[in-house]
Amino acid sequence: MADTKKLFIKTYGCQMNVYDSERMAEALGVEAMGEAGYEQVSSPDKADMILLNTCHIREKAAEKVYSELGRLKGLKAKNPDLKIGVTGCVAQAEGEEIVRRQPAVDLVVGPQSYHRLPAMEAKVRSGDRALDTDFPQEDKFDHLKSRPKAKRGPTAFLTVQEGCDKFCAFCVVPYTRGAEVSRPVDRIIGEARDLVERGVREITLLGQNVNAYHGLDDAGDEASLADLIWKLNAVDGLERIRFTTSHPNDMDDALIEAHGTCEKLMPYLHLPVQAGSDRILKTMNRKHTAEDYIRLIERIRAARPDILISGDFIVGFPEESDQDFADTMALIEEVKYGQAFSFKYSTRPGTPAAEKPQIDPDVASDRLYRLQALLTQQQRDIQDAMVGHEVGVLFEKTGRLEGQLIGKSDHLHAVHVLAPSDMIGEIGRVKIVASEANSLKGELICD
Ligand code: 5AD
Ligand code: SF4
Image (tube, rainbow, N blue to C red; front, side, top):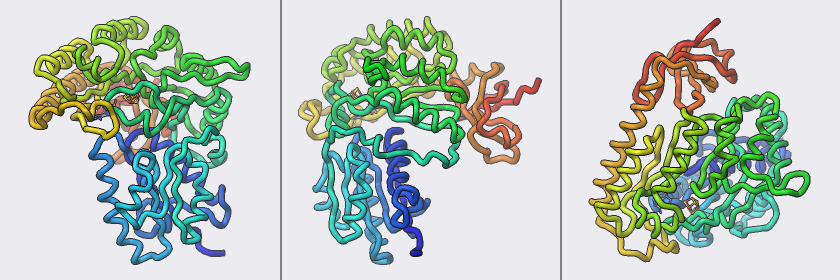
């Protein structure tokens, strides 16, 4: 038998890409393709197939792909059998243009067509190029079955919804990932059960607009994200449920209530607002005001007072004035974020905001600096306030120090604790004793 071929996947961007990369590795794996299959390796040097699973959300993310391709093409001289593929949102957005810019690329496939990877692999092996950026109607995940027996770590992502119909004026997602599509409830529950059997204790439900989820249940009725969460709450062995990422306008009453009543749903919510100025929110096409968002956070906190709120912000959006920026800072002061992701606006060709007059990049950099300083301070304050509290920690792996385990608290803080390694995969009760730069230090509570 010939040596098993080697697959290297590099993943850029969001958690949905992490999930997709796992599915691609399975689709090309030995169990799926027999002798033609690949084993995954952690370095590109010896690989026979390199896939870059790419992100197109900001210009920098897309440009990184071309620099990486420039470095990787040299490996073809050493291994003439090496094939290079580009997957993900750059593949979807740029298609054939990728091959024009970098002829060393053999395969280009968009996020909706990963189930066609085995056929595309065969095509590139026979010396052709393969390109697929369709939006097929079928559910790609139906064709991308997980290997049932492989053991897994305690946490996993599970994509339940893809695409977005919101068309925020800055965002490429509605173009690269297409219209909103929700997977049926029974497929998701089946996949969740399978993950639990393989050792998973915490599942993060993923979707570009996950709280707009509206998949069909067994009876053919539409289920909301809250309905889905309650069904998952009943899965034995699953201990924790999270979801990301959400749009404020899709936070319905049932979902807010679930944060107060559903015991496995963790007290953490990523709810991007992007900006705090109504004028900017309007040109961003967000379809809510700053006040709507603040009132919504109040309702969520009434249901679950200790919930940790996380957000996304864009500074330097076209026409953002000093006053608009001050409004964003004021919103942040009011909400108090436990975690946040913030970006300088990046022009994305084809989106409505790209047509508008852009603001001075130095002004945008200065605003980003000030905004991040405020957010960092808030995160630190919320983290520091955990000292002295007891929290649940799901242990995920060993730490840098002897005898140390690392895990995540209910509020998604990284916590390190001295604990026996057989506690990996378990939720321990931990007392927080110190707050450090990006993590908390805890002590195991033994009764
Ligand atoms: N420029 C900067 N940030 C962007 N995001 C999306 N599009 C852009 C863009 N063109 C940010 C938003 C979104 C997150 C995933 O990325 O904050 O919530
Ligand atoms: Fe992009 Fe999110 Fe807006 Fe959809 S809701 S267009 S994914 S920023």
